[in-house]
Picture 1 (tube, helix red, strand yellow):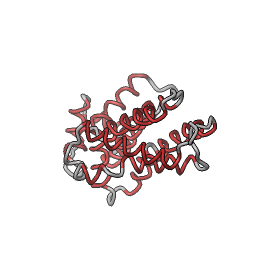
Picture 2 (cartoon, rainbow, N blue to C red):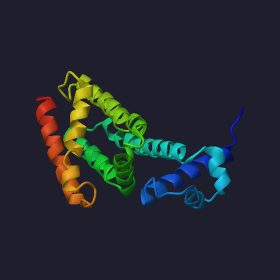
Picture 3 (cartoon, rainbow, N blue to C red):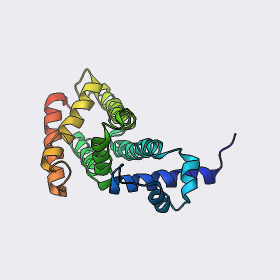
Length: 208
Protein backbone atom coordinates (compact mmCIF):
# COMPACT_ATOMS: atom_id res chain seq x y z
CA UNK A 1 0.00 0.00 0.00
CA UNK A 2 1.34 3.41 -1.00
CA UNK A 3 1.24 6.09 1.67
CA UNK A 4 0.33 9.50 0.23
CA UNK A 5 2.72 12.44 0.52
CA UNK A 6 -0.04 14.47 2.14
CA UNK A 7 -0.58 11.88 4.85
CA UNK A 8 3.15 11.78 5.63
CA UNK A 9 3.33 15.59 5.78
CA UNK A 10 0.28 15.73 8.04
CA UNK A 11 1.77 13.16 10.39
CA UNK A 12 5.02 15.14 10.56
CA UNK A 13 3.07 18.32 11.32
CA UNK A 14 1.24 16.53 14.13
CA UNK A 15 4.47 15.21 15.64
CA UNK A 16 6.09 18.65 15.43
CA UNK A 17 3.05 20.29 16.96
CA UNK A 18 2.88 17.66 19.69
CA UNK A 19 6.51 18.17 20.66
CA UNK A 20 6.00 21.93 20.82
CA UNK A 21 2.98 21.55 23.12
CA UNK A 22 4.60 18.88 25.31
CA UNK A 23 7.71 21.06 25.68
CA UNK A 24 5.60 24.06 26.64
CA UNK A 25 3.01 22.38 28.87
CA UNK A 26 4.53 19.10 29.99
CA UNK A 27 2.85 15.76 29.34
CA UNK A 28 0.17 15.92 32.03
CA UNK A 29 -1.03 19.44 31.16
CA UNK A 30 -0.97 18.99 27.37
CA UNK A 31 -4.27 18.22 25.69
CA UNK A 32 -4.92 16.71 22.27
CA UNK A 33 -7.06 19.66 21.18
CA UNK A 34 -4.16 22.03 21.81
CA UNK A 35 -1.87 19.71 19.85
CA UNK A 36 -4.36 19.68 16.98
CA UNK A 37 -4.52 23.49 17.00
CA UNK A 38 -0.71 23.76 17.07
CA UNK A 39 -0.48 21.27 14.17
CA UNK A 40 -3.14 22.96 12.07
CA UNK A 41 -5.37 19.88 11.88
CA UNK A 42 -8.69 18.74 13.33
CA UNK A 43 -8.66 16.80 16.60
CA UNK A 44 -10.00 13.58 14.96
CA UNK A 45 -7.09 13.75 12.51
CA UNK A 46 -4.63 13.46 15.40
CA UNK A 47 -6.37 10.31 16.60
CA UNK A 48 -6.45 8.91 13.05
CA UNK A 49 -2.66 9.11 12.89
CA UNK A 50 -1.80 8.29 16.50
CA UNK A 51 -4.24 6.47 18.74
CA UNK A 52 -3.86 8.30 22.05
CA UNK A 53 -1.81 10.91 23.91
CA UNK A 54 0.72 8.39 25.25
CA UNK A 55 1.43 7.05 21.74
CA UNK A 56 1.66 10.61 20.50
CA UNK A 57 4.22 11.46 23.18
CA UNK A 58 6.43 8.46 22.34
CA UNK A 59 6.40 9.20 18.62
CA UNK A 60 6.93 12.95 19.12
CA UNK A 61 9.96 12.29 21.32
CA UNK A 62 11.37 9.83 18.78
CA UNK A 63 10.87 12.26 15.91
CA UNK A 64 12.51 15.10 17.85
CA UNK A 65 15.47 12.86 18.70
CA UNK A 66 15.84 11.85 15.03
CA UNK A 67 15.84 15.48 13.91
CA UNK A 68 18.48 16.33 16.52
CA UNK A 69 20.58 13.35 15.41
CA UNK A 70 20.55 14.39 11.74
CA UNK A 71 21.76 17.87 12.66
CA UNK A 72 24.55 16.44 14.84
CA UNK A 73 25.66 14.03 12.11
CA UNK A 74 25.94 16.97 9.73
CA UNK A 75 28.14 18.73 12.31
CA UNK A 76 30.65 15.85 12.08
CA UNK A 77 31.22 16.32 8.36
CA UNK A 78 34.43 18.43 8.67
CA UNK A 79 36.12 15.34 10.18
CA UNK A 80 35.52 13.36 6.98
CA UNK A 81 38.23 15.27 5.14
CA UNK A 82 40.07 17.03 7.95
CA UNK A 83 42.60 19.60 6.79
CA UNK A 84 46.17 19.88 8.06
CA UNK A 85 45.17 21.57 11.33
CA UNK A 86 43.42 18.74 13.17
CA UNK A 87 43.06 20.77 16.36
CA UNK A 88 41.15 23.48 14.49
CA UNK A 89 38.88 20.90 12.87
CA UNK A 90 38.12 19.21 16.19
CA UNK A 91 37.40 22.60 17.78
CA UNK A 92 35.08 23.49 14.91
CA UNK A 93 33.19 20.20 15.23
CA UNK A 94 33.06 20.43 19.01
CA UNK A 95 31.70 23.97 18.88
CA UNK A 96 29.01 22.96 16.38
CA UNK A 97 27.97 20.06 18.59
CA UNK A 98 27.79 22.29 21.66
CA UNK A 99 25.61 24.82 19.83
CA UNK A 100 23.22 22.02 18.91
CA UNK A 101 23.33 20.48 22.37
CA UNK A 102 22.41 23.78 24.03
CA UNK A 103 19.74 25.02 21.62
CA UNK A 104 16.19 25.38 22.94
CA UNK A 105 14.86 22.28 21.18
CA UNK A 106 17.57 20.00 22.55
CA UNK A 107 17.13 21.41 26.06
CA UNK A 108 13.38 20.85 25.80
CA UNK A 109 13.95 17.26 24.70
CA UNK A 110 16.15 16.55 27.71
CA UNK A 111 13.77 18.30 30.12
CA UNK A 112 10.85 16.22 28.86
CA UNK A 113 12.89 13.03 29.09
CA UNK A 114 13.94 13.75 32.67
CA UNK A 115 10.42 14.79 33.70
CA UNK A 116 8.61 11.79 32.21
CA UNK A 117 11.17 8.98 32.59
CA UNK A 118 9.12 7.31 35.36
CA UNK A 119 5.89 7.44 33.39
CA UNK A 120 7.58 6.46 30.09
CA UNK A 121 10.75 4.45 30.86
CA UNK A 122 10.78 3.08 27.30
CA UNK A 123 11.24 6.59 25.87
CA UNK A 124 14.82 6.61 27.18
CA UNK A 125 15.64 3.76 24.79
CA UNK A 126 13.89 5.53 21.92
CA UNK A 127 15.79 8.79 22.46
CA UNK A 128 19.12 7.07 23.13
CA UNK A 129 18.89 4.99 19.97
CA UNK A 130 18.27 8.11 17.88
CA UNK A 131 20.71 10.23 19.87
CA UNK A 132 23.93 9.51 21.79
CA UNK A 133 24.32 5.92 20.59
CA UNK A 134 24.16 6.74 16.87
CA UNK A 135 26.19 9.91 17.27
CA UNK A 136 28.98 8.07 19.10
CA UNK A 137 29.04 5.41 16.39
CA UNK A 138 29.40 8.05 13.67
CA UNK A 139 32.10 9.93 15.60
CA UNK A 140 33.98 6.68 16.30
CA UNK A 141 34.00 5.91 12.57
CA UNK A 142 35.58 9.27 11.75
CA UNK A 143 38.13 8.99 14.55
CA UNK A 144 39.07 5.50 13.34
CA UNK A 145 39.77 6.88 9.87
CA UNK A 146 42.01 9.55 11.36
CA UNK A 147 43.85 6.86 13.32
CA UNK A 148 44.37 4.81 10.15
CA UNK A 149 46.10 7.76 8.50
CA UNK A 150 48.33 8.29 11.55
CA UNK A 151 46.70 11.50 12.75
CA UNK A 152 45.42 10.00 16.00
CA UNK A 153 46.81 7.30 18.25
CA UNK A 154 44.02 5.10 19.57
CA UNK A 155 43.08 1.43 19.80
CA UNK A 156 39.39 1.76 20.67
CA UNK A 157 37.57 4.34 18.52
CA UNK A 158 34.26 3.76 20.33
CA UNK A 159 35.80 4.57 23.69
CA UNK A 160 37.62 7.58 22.26
CA UNK A 161 34.36 8.93 20.81
CA UNK A 162 32.58 8.38 24.11
CA UNK A 163 35.31 10.23 25.98
CA UNK A 164 35.33 13.13 23.52
CA UNK A 165 31.57 13.60 24.00
CA UNK A 166 31.87 13.26 27.78
CA UNK A 167 34.55 15.95 27.90
CA UNK A 168 32.46 18.18 25.64
CA UNK A 169 29.05 17.87 27.27
CA UNK A 170 30.07 16.93 30.83
CA UNK A 171 30.48 20.51 32.12
CA UNK A 172 27.20 21.74 30.67
CA UNK A 173 24.71 20.64 33.32
CA UNK A 174 26.61 22.37 36.12
CA UNK A 175 27.54 25.49 34.13
CA UNK A 176 24.04 25.93 32.71
CA UNK A 177 22.38 25.19 36.08
CA UNK A 178 20.62 22.19 34.52
CA UNK A 179 19.63 24.15 31.43
CA UNK A 180 18.21 27.19 33.23
CA UNK A 181 21.16 29.44 32.40
CA UNK A 182 22.13 30.08 28.80
CA UNK A 183 25.86 29.80 28.10
CA UNK A 184 27.30 32.46 25.80
CA UNK A 185 29.42 31.61 22.78
CA UNK A 186 32.70 32.52 24.49
CA UNK A 187 31.99 29.99 27.23
CA UNK A 188 31.07 27.30 24.70
CA UNK A 189 34.31 27.92 22.82
CA UNK A 190 36.31 27.74 26.05
CA UNK A 191 34.74 24.35 26.84
CA UNK A 192 35.51 23.17 23.30
CA UNK A 193 39.17 24.24 23.49
CA UNK A 194 39.63 22.49 26.84
CA UNK A 195 37.98 19.35 25.43
CA UNK A 196 40.23 19.23 22.38
CA UNK A 197 43.38 19.91 24.41
CA UNK A 198 42.63 17.01 26.76
CA UNK A 199 41.56 14.74 23.90
CA UNK A 200 44.71 15.38 21.86
CA UNK A 201 46.90 14.96 24.93
CA UNK A 202 45.45 11.47 25.28
CA UNK A 203 45.03 10.47 21.65
CA UNK A 204 47.06 12.84 19.47
CA UNK A 205 49.80 11.32 17.34
CA UNK A 206 53.16 12.92 18.25
CA UNK A 207 54.26 13.17 14.62
CA UNK A 208 50.91 14.43 13.26
